Structures are given as C-alpha cells and as structure tokens.
Length: 307
Image 1: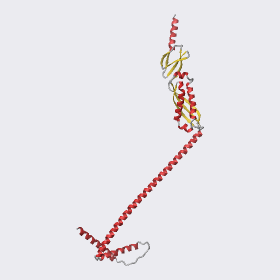
Image 2 (image 1 turned 45 degrees about the vertical axis):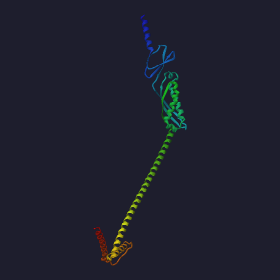
Image 3 (image 1 turned 90 degrees about the vertical axis):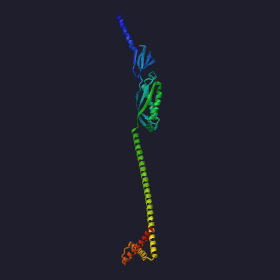
Image 4 (image 1 turned 60 degrees about the vertical axis):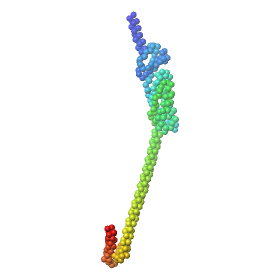
C-alpha cells in the first residue's frame, strides 16, 4: 500500500512538471496535440495536458540579423562586382514561421541573395556605386513582400560592400584624376581671366583719373593765363594812360620790356653763341624805375578814391 502511494505521488509530481511550461521573454512556443498545432504560448507560465500536448517550436520573436555572404554580380553593362550585405528581420507570427516554411533563416537568406542578383544586375555600374539607398529600398520591398506569408517582417536590408574588379578600379581612378585635372585647369583659366579683367579695370580707372587730372590742370593753366592776360592788359592800360599824359617813363617801360624779352630769347636759343654788345644798364634800370613810378602813381590814385 505504501508503495502504491509513493508511486501515485511520484506520478502526480511528474504530471505537474510535465504540464507546467514557462516561456521566456522574447520567445513564443507553439503547442501541438497529437502532432497538430493548437495554439501559441506567450511569455509567462502556462499549463498543458501532459502526454497529450507537446511543445512544437520555440520561436525567437526578437529582431534578428543574417549576414549575406559575398557573391559575384554581373551588372547591366557587363561589369563583375563582389557584393555582400546584411538582413534584419523579425518573427511576427510564430505559428506561420514554424509551419509555413522549413528552415526560415536559410529560406530568407537564399531569397535575399537571389534578389540582390536580380536588382543589381538590372543596373549600370555607375548606378550601383551611387544609388545604394535605392538598391536597399528595392530589395527591402521585394523580400518583405515575399516573406510576409511566413509571418516575418523584414525591417532592413543593407548592402555592405560593392567591390569592382581591380582593373576597373584603376580605370576609375585614372578617370577621377583626369576630371580633377580638368577642373583645376578650368579654375586656373577662370582665375587668369578674372585677373585680366581686374587689371583692365584698374588701367581703365587709372586712365580716367589721369584724364581728369589733365582736365583739371588745363583748367588751372587756362585760369592762370586768363589772370596773367588781365594783369598784362591792366599794366598796358596804365602805361597807355601815362603816355597819353606825356610821361616819358611809360615809353621806357615798353622799350625795356622788349629789350629784356629779346635778350631772354637769345640766351635760351640752343645754338652756341658769343655775344658782344654794349649794354646801358642805367637806361634799363631807369626804364624799370619808370614802371615802378607809374605803378606807385596808380596805387596812390586808388587810395585817394577809397579815402
């Protein structure tokens, strides 16, 4: 009897342990009854019928990542490149992921690999190297749609490396160098042109300023000649009045003026000369004295008028 009780208690404990299931956070377990799916257990403590129900699949519901191995892709313009990438996905429906596809990760990886060849093979090499975001977006749309029946959500597909052949890389490097040299030549030519324009503008401005200076100088010279002529006319008028009054010194003024002017022209002539001529210095000084007397007389008259 005691043996039977012990066996019974042990069986009860075994049934309890077989019926209690704890699902960890981030996972979901499928439950099968006699091999057929019945329901899915969320994270937490659950009870099943021992020896009738069984755990079918333990699905990881967290976002996972798959590395896409490097592969050769032939582009639209027949360039062969090496490409690899990564896929991020998450299981949204544990039952469908467990029973709609076998080896879910391998299926997702193969699907991504074939679509990488399809998408990138329809593009030129230049597009391949410059439009990586567009490639990722197209791959994501295609693979996500294809895996939706499996209860998966593909969140991101990223192309990591695109490696062209070595000879193609060298050719592209030469092309880039030629483009840089071309741009440098263009910039140098533009700089030279700007410098020439600036120099021409400077010369133009200098010529304008020089012309304005000549204009101002001519104006000043004309004004000086005008005043000199006015002074000469005034002096002639004064001397003429003195002559009209019978002043002999006025006649001496005209004679002395012509005398001095003739001597100055003779002395400034470029030819070598030796001059012997009598000079009556007293007569010349007398003529100049007569001019002074005439001027003094004119000034005295002006002062009397003012007084």
